[in-house]
Structure formats: structure tokens, C-alpha cells
Amino acid sequence: MLNQPVPDFELPSTNNKTFRLSTVSGKNLVIYFYPKDNTPGCTTEGQEFRDAYTEFTKLDCDIVGISRDSIKSHENFKMKMGFPFELLSDADETACKLFDVMKMKNMYGKQVRGIDRSTFVVDGKGILRREWRGVKVAGHVQEVLEYVKTLPRESHES
Image (cartoon, rainbow, N blue to C red; front, side, top):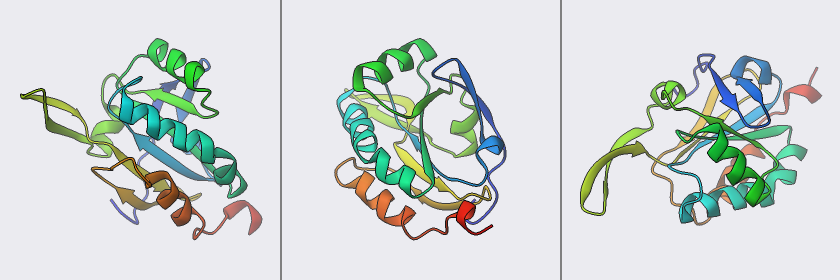
């Protein structure tokens, strides 16, 4: 899927919104998939995206986080952590399937199907420009930010 257009998708979002990929055109977008609200790694990753959010927005780049948790769970997580970006609920795994992030994982000695922590950068024309799979949280957000700095900013070219 790299360097290909990302098919449009729509998911329920925090703040009583509906996120639709096609409405984000003109801006770069970071889409990060994470396993579960309020778990240590997911909390740290979200906080790091939160802390770098201003730097991303200066680069005409927005951020959305996606997991299979409910909107109610997302609203609580977002409020508790002060996330300035929206969290999307993918209960039926629409986007998870699109980006192929569902994997079998070992948890407490059991095989469980869950989201493989992954991040994707979609440019302002809707093209998938970069992907990170099996992400380790430490240093990841900074790496994504450094990559976004290399992208052309669509809205300043026209």
C-alpha cells in the first residue's frame, strides 16, 4: 500500500464527530493504531503525540489515534490525558483491516488477536507515504515527527 492512495474510510470519533479520511485532504495526517485505552504503552505513546502536537500542526499535519475501544472509553482516555487530537473507534475493524494491523499476540501466555501497534503517514493527497509496524514506544513519536518534516506541505504550494 506504500505510495498508493489510501481508500477512504469513516469511523466514529471523539467529540461526537465522524472522521472521514477524504475530508482531511490538503494536510498530512498521522494515523496511529494502538491496542487499548489506559494501558501503559498506549498511554505513553498518546502522551508523546500530545506533547509534540504543536510541532506536528506547525507542519500542517494532524494526528488521529485508532483502537477498537468504544467512543465512551476514548472520551474518558482523551479527557484524562488531555489529548488535543481525536481518537477513533474501530469496533468492527474497518480501518484495522484496511491497514492490516490485526495480529495474533501472546498475552499472559495466551494467544489473543489484537492491534499491532503501528503508525502511518498519509500525505495531503491521500497517499500513504510511510509506515511503522510493531512499534516500540520509546523514541517513536520523534521519529515520526522527523519524517513529517521531510514532507511537502500541500496548502503552502497552491
